[in-house]
Length: 463
Ligand code: UDX
Ligand code: UDX
Ligand code: ADP
Image (tube, rainbow, N blue to C red):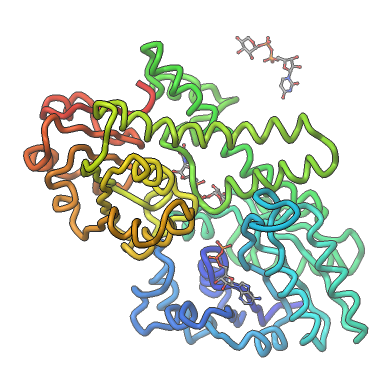
């Protein structure tokens, strides 16, 4: 089967960039991205592509070139489903906030709604592709909904997990380490797999496209994220030990990273990992392990989350202790709010939890992030429900300018590793701050010696 029409349900951080790149690389395929959220679709259709709802380096140029040619954004979900041969499901799967599995399991209600909608509308055979990260055996649930429509339409369910990281989504999509496609081992399943392999092979070498059964594919995604997060918690655990012993975690990371069996990536000690995936996927893994009665497996992976929570808490405690055990009424400036550089995404960002701790200590928080608005910052804090929105509004200020944000501050805390922070005139910032002037570098991006030469009391992570 030759694919000429693709629909993607969900115009978010995964669906948007992935479909833009497919449209760019496959001009013969018409790609329609649909979403229930009217504002989001309007933003994707904004005549000025700088205003698309997701900030990713290189993305707005790709959208500008393909939009209206073979890339479309629409709220007409039914029409897009009806016309497409392949439907990607790329909706959000947050951790459940209610009922059984609350705080652990993935909430599949959006996935189920999509499956039901596809079942209702489809009149011809279709390939349905799981793109969202899902618990193992979700494909089975989707299949049972789709196979019970009674209208004779045949569906093939594929798992094609996304491995892109935010901030580098476009390069990750253009030059992936691998593409993973899981499907049924029946002849029809293999046909569907091959159809999707054809799409990707427009720009990805065939030997980088792995095909597996559905369950291996689903579990590989969770495993990859669990391993990556585990590396960060492992190095963060060592950072605390380094602080006590006089070792330097950067030196340790460098030394172990040169062992080719360990590798040098993902060993940067930090204030803690964030993002929509790591915590959610590990909680999900823990929940699945528990549901099979595998308590040792569950406990093993849960420790990665416990360590990460500890690292965030440790950072806020260090600020309070260093500032003579009180931050009440002190201005503490956060440089960065996003969960990592080069993205406007703040989901599970360490900054949210550190701010919440410091506000509990009655600190006044000022924030500068080049891509995050005040309303987003406030809604992140409100979501924790620690205090009223009015209180958050009174205690948190946001600035469009980093120097203004730091003016008169008792301490500056770096929460995101934005490159621009390294190029600031730190002497100018020092001169405008209360003395002693403290810098807590949660990303180890500044040079301790240079900062101390200016006069700062500087503390990084793990040294
Ligand atoms: C280890 C370190 O590799 C070495 O760098 C250090 O100097 C000493 O300790 P060693 O114990 O000799 O070396 O062997 P190694 O190859 O690391 O294997 C250790 C154990 O892990 C073995 O029982 C091996 O069978 C097991 N292993 C190793 C696995 O079960 N799976 C693997 O993927 C690798
Ligand atoms: C992750 C996976 O990398 C990606 O493959 C998957 O598809 C989605 O989840 P993402 O969450 O976008 O991607 O970003 P990632 O670069 O993995 O960073 C996650 C968090 O870990 C960030 O908060 C980052 O700052 C932190 N991190 C990363 C560290 O603290 N140290 C490191 O060495 C690497
Ligand atoms: P991700 O990081 O997984 O891409 P996002 O939250 O950024 O997650 O995007 C998911 C998108 O899916 C949201 O814009 C949401 O409005 C959309 N969505 C959720 N359920 C449906 C549905 N049934 N039909 C269409 N769009 C949906």
